Image (cartoon, helix red, strand yellow):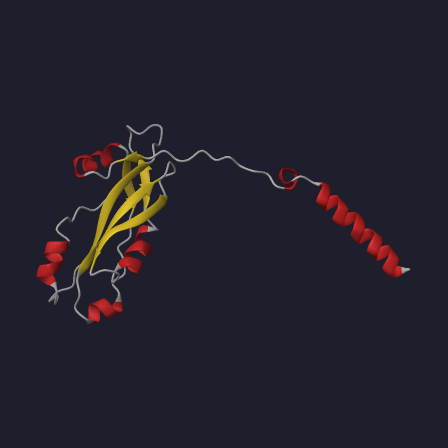
Length: 155
């Protein structure tokens, strides 16, 4: 008798699930894509100040292995600042030496915050660039680092 009751309940449950349309059990959200103003071109880099001001930045931690090896370098990012003044995402545009400082730089960048400038009353999201530099005294790769990381502009 127990098996029959259990089987009946299970059958009703399975049939009721099968009769539901997929959109009745889940709610789909049609989010609008974020429209960023692209300020990544060299000619537009100075325009960032019209939109966003850094209110919190954090220096990256120097990787122990790179310090031991006497390496200096940089990580150049394309950064998305969303309408809340938080990091909407990033892409590593270039790093030197490749891969050495990426994780440390990304971890620091993830903690940055921005405030809309007085001219940015609509909190317009933007794409911009920034570079985080890693310099150690008596660097073994100083000349190459200066060549590869010539842009020292920080957001």
